[in-house]
Amino acid sequence: MSRSLRIAWFASLLLGIGLLAACGIAIDAEQTRVCRSALPALNPGAVIAVERVREGPAARSLRIDYTARHPDRPVLERFAICQFAAEGLSPNKAELTGLGTEEGPLSGASLYMLKRYYLDTPEGAAGDPGSRPDADVAEIPMAAAYWLQQILVSLPRTAIYALLSVAFALVFGLSGRINLAFGELAAIGSAATIAGASIVLASGASAPVLGLAAGLAASLFAGAIHSAVGGTFTIGRITAESPQPSLIATVGLSLFLMEYLRLVQSPVTVWLPPIWSEAWPLARAQDFLVSLTPITIITSGIGLAAALSLLWLVQATSFGRAWRAYADDAKAAALMGVNGPRLLVQTLALAGAMAGLSGMLIVAQYGGLGFAGGFQYGLKALIAAIIGGIGSIPGAMLGGFAVGLFETLWSAYLPIEIRDMALYAALVVFLIFRPGGLLGFKDPTPRPV
Image (cartoon, rainbow, N blue to C red; front, side):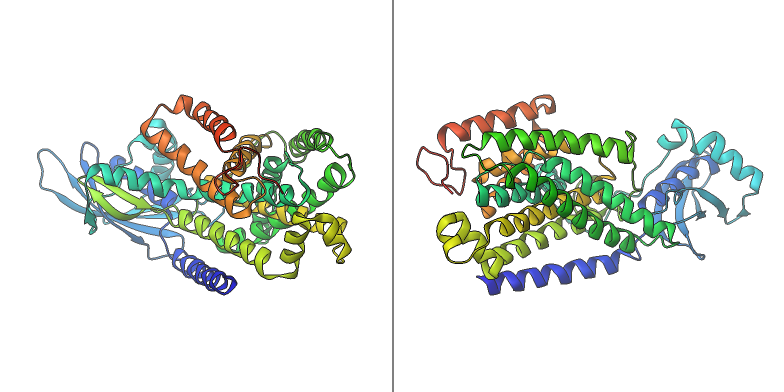
């Protein structure tokens, strides 16, 4: 089993490296949108059809080939070359600094008027003609295309929930305590990701790979440190037989971290610009394209690699053996030389790193997370851990996948206003009929650890 996990992890790593390399030459979707939005202003009254988007002749530029159809004229084949101020993770990467056509470049005054009185208005944003809907992909029924698109959209959400659920399972499996601060630890991981990417930008580099790599390292470190320190005082130092004092202490830790984030990063959420968001068509149903973005593949692949690595760590390392032994029988493990307090700190740090990593995925996929935004993520991840089997690491992963898929499909087919109510009702059903969770015991009692 451990050998297969290592092979799967290595395959996921190679896939991620290949995707990162491929994404380095991808056309930036935000810059493409800005350039497309300028086309109607260059062709008043015409129907625009974008034929092709490719890299421009200069750095930080792209070229759009398109047709302009006027009611009383022949179809014109035209092109536009857009020059931008920056690229990658730079906040001003979508700032248009130059625009040229087959008739020559626009003057500075014309470019200013275009930006000030068209692109920066709601009409300009709504004037984006989009790209051509056709693609050389398989034709499938509309119902299947819509369902497939929803499954693909759910991948990052399930990865985030799975990593947070694993954090709950790691701590509960070892100590029998629930740490309610993991949502806020995800928010700390998000803030650390922004900080790491900002440091890279301040050094003069704007490559998304470098920024996300720095953010990944910062999120893992910040999540591990805050979890180890906070968990030591709220779980390690409270030795009461009942778990309630620790549970209340973690509520206090959650509120402390929330306020701490508000003071450190301010109430204003800092957003990273979208990266690798170009839609790759996979299938189609008439004019509806089933698409997937590179960043979705990357965030999902990182989540998969982290999950496989964690399974390997628990099953095939000395830490994993000590964790499983202490979870089964703490006193017997202590007699065999397992250092319980040190193991708890290591587990808290590992769980915090998983929570911090989930925060990094939130930033990479959605752009940012506010100081109070982690609460909902933590609550739903706890529900996922309970549904999967609290204390079971594979069960937590399965629960995260189930909750993410449930939310996506409910939002796609049923009223989104009652989605959370339905999720909480599903939790009640599980607690009544299968309190041990999906991978727990079938006995009408919670899963013993």
